[in-house]
Image (cartoon, rainbow, N blue to C red):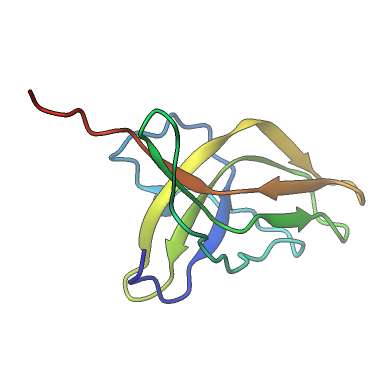
Length: 121
């Protein structure tokens, strides 16, 4: 994470089942004027009682504004924009979110959880 230069969160509209090989750059981003990909900052890594490690970004909020056609958001990914863009991780939302009315909003709190490494005997 120390090599990130300016990570942002992008949303996508596609119905997918993300895997480690998913190309999030091939997904369809929203096109409405309400949408921009905001910058995120990662916090400190912390350990859970089961030995897994977690790191989270600052949460970001997307608010619908304007008169653009409604769009259904299905997921997000964190990318370091550049030449080329470098995707770090992404996920589906727990449920699709419709963005098309003035008070429609979506909050995303991207993060990663690394499972514990088993001790060898």
